Length: 257
Image 1 (cartoon, one colour):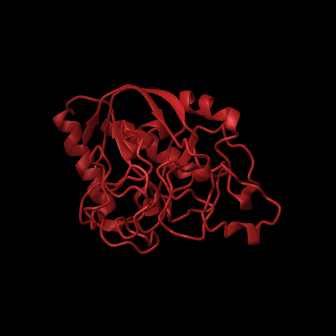
Image 2 (cartoon, helix red, strand yellow; image 1 turned 45 degrees about the vertical axis):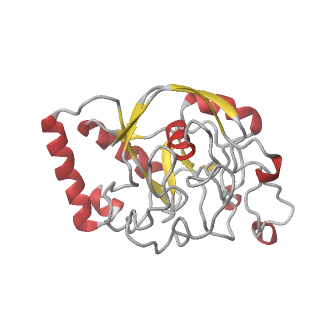
């Protein structure tokens, strides 16, 4: 895990030209008349973030491992978050992920302050290579593989309050494109993939309604409080994670199938 210092940070998009869900606007043909302008890209806000630790890599958190074979939804991420508490871990918050990807200097992309550079991060989020395959896909704080798959996370109250006046986060168009700010979890991050309503930068955010299908491109990262872990708890965690590596599926790992 990487430790990150707490503090007050200005994070989010400050250029109106980037406050769009997709440069291609391909979603407009499927949802005519629906204006999502700015509602999947977080505007610049000031947030207070306590210190935290986060896995360097997306779950299962190990370089060279395969990405999970399925995704999470609102119900299963809550179950996973609950189980992680037994191992001194938890779901990250949206603010923590935002800081981990953008860094204190608020980079628009993990690898560059302002410019989108094709090929530096996995662009096929449905069939990506092994986790950590592209060393170029690294954030200013050393976190890897942002902008590949989005990340289910806790919607921390401070950020939710700051984004509420902007009508964020929202559900996707096929779930009504309505305000989702009262939920306890949301999905952080954009994607390098074209043809989506997602943001293409570090500042993406959306959510899903309860019990919606499992979307493969909605993944997970593990966070924890600062400090050294209890050795016995750490062993138990590694054993629990190894069970996931055997099946490669959140659903099977959590006993839902």
